[in-house]
Amino acid sequence: MKELQHLNKYFFKYKYHLLLGIIITIVARIFLLFTPRFVREIFKVVEDYKAGKISEIAIVKSELLEDIFYIIGAAVIAGIFTFLMRQTIINMSRYIEYDLKNEIYQQYQRLSLNFYKKNRTGDLMNRISEDVGRVRMYAGPAIMYSINTITLFIIALVYMYSEAPKLTLYTVIPLPILSVAIYKLSKEIHKRSTTVQVYLSKLSTFTQESFSGISVIKAYGIEPQTSKNFESLSEGSKDKQLALVRIQALFFPMMVLLIGISNLIVIYIGGMQYINGEIESLGTIAEFIIYVNMLTWPVATVGWVTSIIQQAEASQKRINEFLDIQPEIKNTVETPSHITGDIAFKNVSFTYDDTNIEALKNVTFDIKHGETLAIIGKTGSGKSTILDLIGRLYDCNSGEISIDNTAINKLNLYSLRDSIGYVPQDAFLFSDSIKNNIMFGKEDATEEEVIQAAKQAQVHKNIVKFAQGYNTVLGERGITLSGGQKQRVSIARAIIKDPKILLFDDCLSAVDTETEEKILSNLYKIANGKTTIIVSHRVSSAKNADKIIVLDNGKIIQEGTHNSLINKEGYYKTLYLKQLSEKEIS
Image 1 (cartoon, rainbow, N blue to C red):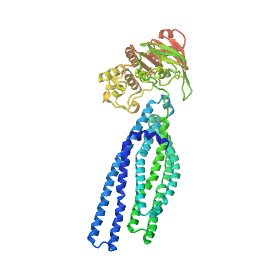
Image 2: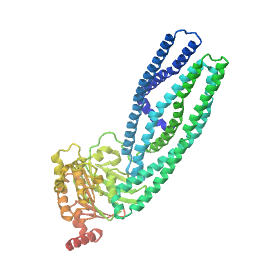
Image 3: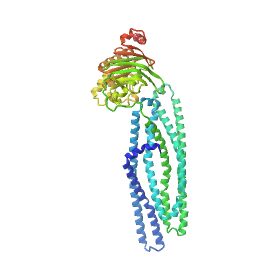
Image 4: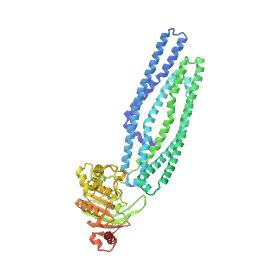
């Protein structure tokens, strides 16, 4: 139960729902337990008539009808309160489920980019859906039936003991046996529940990756192999589920057996006591049989509730593993920061934790507000890493990054990121309309601003050709659009924000040279007064920048302007001549 202590704050938050639910449960059980006592009274009336204590049949009928009326009335009232019990406690569990999902999602939002490199999307989705669902079963049904069972047992045993103490003691003999059996089985259920959840995460991860990469699977014709791998995972999951079900299946037969034994004890011991005159009426035996059978479902739910608790604890443990993680990137300044856009790197080095690749080695450069910096280099030279460090997606291992002469980790994180317009190399678009994807950069943007941004990104003409225009809903990850169109919509999303800093990570690689020239022409107009960094493999994207740096293996090997760099031997001149000849040939 240690892992489930995380939910205590929610129980405190909804304490009035819980307390009201407990009170309603107790009242419902009290009215339900009136039935056996009225049944005993019915037997007593019949016995009194047979013994001659009541002479008129009319009186018998009247008392029988009165007792039947009380039984029906008690059942109706118990039913109403049982309904209200579910409305309070089950509703509380839904509120807790809502809050817990939001807590997990907010934690996912806070966690650093490095976290997502180490964890799979399918597993993260499983923890916020399947695992939270199992925890809700603990916060609702498990608590409700536990209160119900405890209340029923206490009240029933008090009633039973007050009527026939000796018979009550014989009746509860099977209960200690039941308790020991539950303890033994619970440990095994907990173990198997954890294994089941692990397999569910594997299945979720595999299916999510398969659906996301379906085009690659089809292109390589590996559908049969993918299906075989899925079948293998499904088979493993099925085996673990069946192993759990087998152990759970022992509960109900065992409980029904023990309740049956209690009934036999009541009939035999009660019968002997009636013969010996220790109990005065057969109605007491009937009352005890009803009590025992009323306890059948609560006792049966002990196993079910125990199973729910064990599964919930296993799930909450998996959830806590993520909730306990502290973000690597923390906002250390609560006051909003004003960003102008002067950026300076001083002896900055950075190594990725997951691969141990040293992406940057003692990199030093600076760029003033309103200037444009172009970064050229081979794949894997560290270009994108510089942009990630400016947005504080990572913190550098050594050296210092400053913005406006303030160390980047001394700035308000949200102010910093709000001042940046970022266009990633792999343009990611949401399954929403094109308009909303562009407005993602500025939620309160007008339609005119959306169209203007699209025109500046040279994608307006493409959008208006769609039947729904800007209201065209994109497929997952923007699959409706071509690679170049996705990049241009991503550029429109960045520039509509009108940020102080613009970061373009090789975002023109999928467009033709003519379109690239038009976009760059617009970008340089838009970038006036803004700090702009352009990462590219093309010299054409970098030639008009105020400053160019060339990276190789994480180090700056050249820096200067376009004119200065093409007039000296080195990587930049070689790349320029190569791309110039390719352009002439084409």
